[in-house]
Length: 102
Length: 309
Image 1 (cartoon, each protein chain N blue to C red):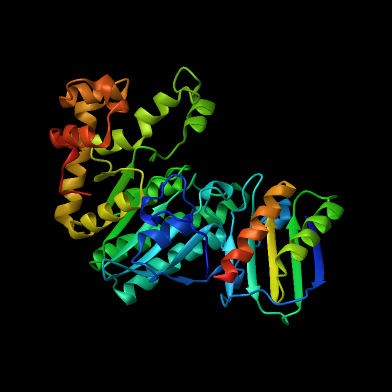
Image 2: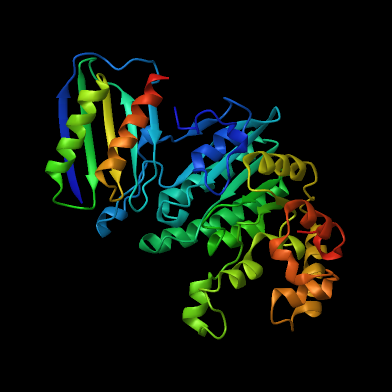
């Protein structure tokens, strides 16, 4: 297992009031994403557990792109990966942010 | 906890087969009434999977909690068949057993188990096997205390292995066409007995031997549901209302039913032979029947109706 953690500062907090949300399933080519509104409003942390080692730079790029697009300030995001492709990861992150905005 | 629903569609119209465990529970219960015990934020994950370098799930593949069903209080457990085939590990099993034991004190109108499992998780097999046995015991105690336990089976993993055994301990079962109930799965039988005994790649054979229609016709399941959350909800409500007492008379009736079944059909080589012997006019047409015409067929088959279990 490889553990990766990325910390970002956002320009604004994510809207909405949902305290937590979960989306996706740990299955082949899929992943689950748990989002919790527990950090300062300008901070976002993404922690990843993946059985596929060696893709740190790809994860870093996907997470940076998500942070820039969604501005998920205040969220601690935890990921259990089942070997998802970058586009699936991106989609799930945006789905998760949408759930938190509800 | 917020969880995804298909946007712009009626959640009850969701395909049971396609839905996740969380989607099934949220849409099955009265809107907004589901309260989860040990939610993902608690991170009660498998202590064993990291030893095998395998990914964990925040809920260990099972969602448990309380809800209301048509206003009545129920406890619900839903397995996620896509995480490790919905298999029973230590935490997964403990969550189900804890729920069943809590029901002895809470006395809900029913406990609903949404099966979606291949059986025991081989990486934590001892804990999984123990969980199966303890779950069956907890169900027996709960039924004896007068709380019905209803199994709903229509997920992609079916109810296999120990999951099939637990299903057999329930008061009543509802199954859809896609649902399968058995103990040894197709690949297990083929591996042990050869492809001549059971060809696991013959999907039609698998479904007419273990699938929902066959289980309903022989009385192995007590309701047949279309593949929607709405249909399973209606079936669950109906079955709660006609769960049998768990007493000596019921158990003797069940023993007599099973003895009569093996005596009457034990020499059949294929499910279609059983259906023909039951009086189904065109056995070969059963797999392709719509829910409505299948319901009419079931109504004419004596074996599909009983007070036992």
